[in-house]
Image (cartoon, rainbow, N blue to C red):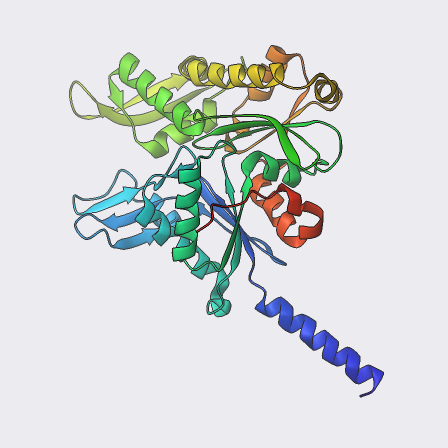
Length: 355
């Protein structure tokens, strides 16, 4: 065989290897599920919602299609969020959702079971780990590894997690807020609280119910939070018109709500997050505290997009707080880096339960 023939054969084998490789990383979130495929980047970003037939529990729609059904389904169809507080609440529905998403991204390579890294809350219990493992295996996984969400977020942002210096990350998702100080490939101090985007939405719902006698749907609340919601006084306060159902008259109604009102409604969950950050800082070793003073805190996750939250945290802690460039994708991008470079980042993986 000539040198040229050998190079051609080697190139063919590499391209075949890339074609056959189907390792994926999954950010299995309460609000959204993102999938990263080795060599291709983020290939899926869809809501963690499943529509099922009420009587048989048969899966009818998953992801974006199912989210459109939230609050609009007839009696024989249920639109379900199978993840709650960052962990599996409905085992069978989560399995259906995972299987559908995995098959969707694998296309022609679906006959090969993938190796998977799944991001989980840092405070996950052994029982919850097993639920994640079993769901992934039943959905068609051949090998599973877990990674803590704040560690994945730190890697996704580009922080030097392997170095002997402190890196502090606050990842605010739909179900949990993960706060961690990371050094030498591990979590030194961490706190995981089940107060995040969902609790913010519920606080707004309760505020509107109490002050306006009005019921609103999930998608309306989400739009309201992102449009005029804030954690810190804004330079220019805003108002928005929303529609819902009058709880007294029972008929549709439209009202105008201001950003100051929504900020008031969010005060309790925001205060819980601020307190958790303070407690994490109090438990951080002095040497790493000095690093955090110098480097500041990085915020990731959908909750980081709430206007003024970085300013509120900065005022409360007297530290520099920055929001990642792409906060919604940091966790899955970080776990994707672990897939792409296991020698560099292999130490950050959590061992799933055996058996």
